[in-house]
Image (cartoon, protein in one colour):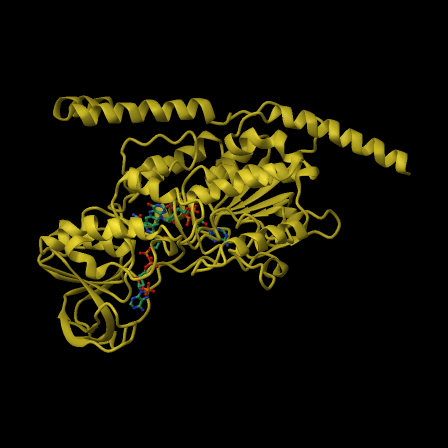
Length: 514
Ligand SMILES: Cc1cc2nc3c(=O)[nH]c(=O)nc-3n(C[C@H](O)[C@H](O)[C@H](O)COP(=O)(O)OP(=O)(O)OC[C@H]3O[C@@H](n4cnc5c(N)ncnc54)[C@H](O)[C@@H]3O)c2cc1C
Ligand SMILES: NC(=O)c1ccc[n+]([C@@H]2O[C@H](COP(=O)([O-])OP(=O)(O)OC[C@H]3O[C@@H](n4cnc5c(N)ncnc54)[C@H](OP(=O)(O)O)[C@@H]3O)[C@@H](O)[C@H]2O)c1
């Protein structure tokens, strides 16, 4: 690190300044907000609580670290073996995969320290593994253990995992951190057995030699852009992206991303045309044809500043349309113009290719191991309290597992905030909302966002998320004492003192009542 900073100082002093500042900033965050690895016994007098955490990706590991540092016991259950499970999706994608957003927005735990502004797969995975070790989570992780059921024990009311109380014990709370990217999604294409070349998924490009080959990339999401960049850097001779729908691309710029995330309403407002117009005029420019018709605040945009330049330089083509069938040496493609919907008429032609890269996404991991009543009509994920608590089960927190679309990021401070909400609910009964209150909040949010095209909880911005947190702390005076704890992870000793006093007072009242 010191050596690379020295090189940077000589070659680019300005960037050196930024990098040095970023390193200092991260150390400061870790020092101020990094929760203790060895919690004091501040929970004296309160029963020790256990939390089951499902998934060992960055959300699971970060949530577990937060729980441990606040004096809770944890057990992590990971479906896959250690090699492909620890680090979640970041253990299973290409070594060339990298963050599209600035790493300052991907600080999934206060103690994370990145060396690069846009780290690649290995650096992110290393940070997850280091965090896992730092908080001594090795002895609390069961690899190769898919969770298939979570049931409440009749006698204790606590959660039992996979019907195995003897083996795993029981739990006061559950954090499901199964993520949204499971196994690769590889739909079969019409007549794909005709194809003479190779077909592979976009997450499986390591070691693929495509120098001088013609690459056909199916899909128009973030993985398609990554595959396009891979193909360019690998020296593919022709690159065509075959995309059936248009998605927003925004500059890979922290200021732009932060400004867009500032839309506190989390939906298309009457002012949304301003950023959309600016993006059209100054970013898409001559490529306006591939800008989507739908609003910017309806789906997750892709952050990339190189894509359009690569297209302009003729290194790749971005085609909109539908696959008709696969041929021996290419794909018969119905090239549609912008106004024509999916499957509509267009101009058919064979786009030649030697390799087909399926950038068709990932299967969504199932939450069906949760109790059936977590999926009530009208209150199914993502329409849960704060998007993560099923109204019938406040002791379940589906951290980052119900997410659909957002301008923001999955790996950020909210992992800690959500975890601490759960810990507060488990510790202090007076802060718990009733099922009715939770549903009222969901209904209220749906009413507030009734005009939002994808549905109230199917799209949000990061500022909206922060507004939810502050609002839900403020509306219940019993939560005020927890505000610093919830939002910043500090001041946890004080609320526990108050909780003890409250519990003693309640006991006294109960006695008087009897
Ligand atoms: C190439 C790529 C780049 C990305 N870049 C970004 C980005 O720049 N910004 C961003 O915000 N997001 C990005 N993402 C999205 C990414 O999914 C999240 O940012 C983040 O990694 C999710 O972490 P997670 O821990 O929530 O889920 P995961 O990393 O998916 O981990 C979930 C874990 O849960 C386990 N699991 C699932 N079901 C069960 C079960 N029933 N029992 C036990 N274990 C189970 C899985 O095996 C897995 O290990 C990217 C995704 C990909 C594929
Ligand atoms: N570096 C990064 O930041 C990065 C990189 C990769 C992935 N990710 C994240 O990982 C997640 C998944 O991204 P992704 O790009 O892999 O998947 P994705 O966003 O789900 O995109 C999949 C694409 O494939 C298309 N598609 C699916 N089935 C198809 C079929 N049968 N025929 C033709 N096209 C088909 C989809 O079209 P429709 O939209 O029309 O269905 C879509 O364009 C996202 O959250 C993304 O943000 C991030």
